[in-house]
Image (tube, rainbow, N blue to C red; front, top):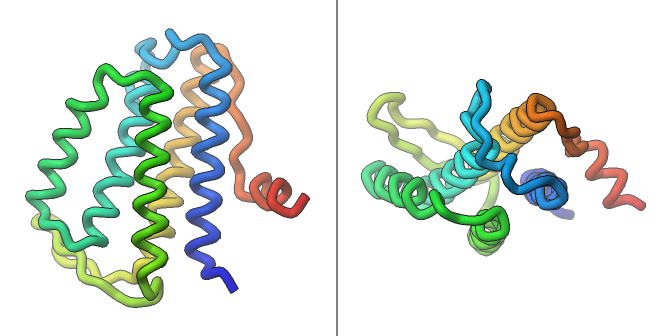
Amino acid sequence: MKHNALQLYDYHLWANQKVFQHLKELPQEILHKEIQSVFPTLFAALVHIYRVENVWLLGMSSASYEEIVDVNNRITEETESKSLEEIEQLFAEIADRYQSFLAQKDLDAAKAYPHPQFGTLMASYADIIQHLVNHGTYHRGNITAMLRQLGYAGVPTDYVFYLYERNS
């Protein structure tokens, strides 16, 4: 039987793909249109989700805090001029890395996550996947709200829609 964390991660990938499919149907200029919201642009929201995906994979892989900060800074610079399709490809690449990583782990095993400000968190890989999925869900909601501000509909990415699609 598939571990619940893996199913949640599969949902997360499905929901991200739904957002990318929807965004590709809209005028591309809205990606960089500045608005008063949680993020200044839709593009910034996507890059934020991608950066956090990298942070947690590095953390689960035992990278140091300094290494994670360095990668985070590089991602910010490297994504500035990317197209939506290029950002989507980055999401696909990190998804592949996650799936390879998770296939080799006991998802219930606990690991230490040291942080200079918050201390050390002891959490299972499954807990971190749950956090990653929650984080993505939250920011996909931000993207939906931002799209509405820009005059466009969002796309349904609730977990139940994933279940309906997977069970049909």
